[in-house]
Each structure stands twice: as C-alpha cells, then as structure tokens.
Length: 103
Image (cartoon, rainbow, N blue to C red; front, side, top):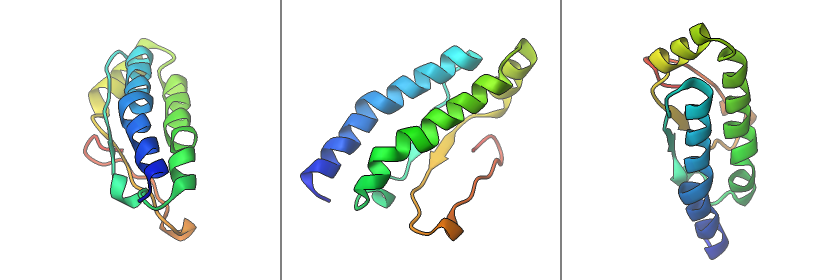
C-alpha cells in the first residue's frame, strides 16, 4: 500500500465515515457504525475513491426512503446495528445480505 492509499484510508476513517454515521443518525435517530475491511481496499485506489459513493451514499439514500415516517425509523433503529463493507475483486463475488442486524 502506497502513501496515497494510506492517506485516502485515513481521510475515510477520520472524516467520511464519521460524517456518514452522523447522517444515518439524522435519518433514523441512531448512528449505525460502519465496519470496513481496510485490507481488502489496500491495493485498490479506485475502490478507495468510490467506496463513499457506491456504498455509503447509496445506503443512506435507501435509508432515507425507508425512514420517511416514524414506523420506518423505528424499524431501522431496532433492526440495523452494523454495516460491514468489504471490497471484492470480481463482480461474481459481490453480494449484499442482512442477518442478525448486520448489513
């Protein structure tokens, strides 16, 4: 991992993901943390550059759609506890799952 990748990871950890968790709190009333597999992104500059838009922004937009009323907000607050992100190299390996409060 080069200097540029380390700087981008630090920016994502210290700023971007902190802001996204705050945004989730504004959306549903509770901050839900992200757990990122940084090792899976270490050698993927493009993945680092697009993780916010492809993962965080899109998830928060979906949460806005769900949380249009108190019932939706309550469902997200009570059901979603953690958001895990892992970078994969092949489209065939991409997946999304929700199990035990973990997306």
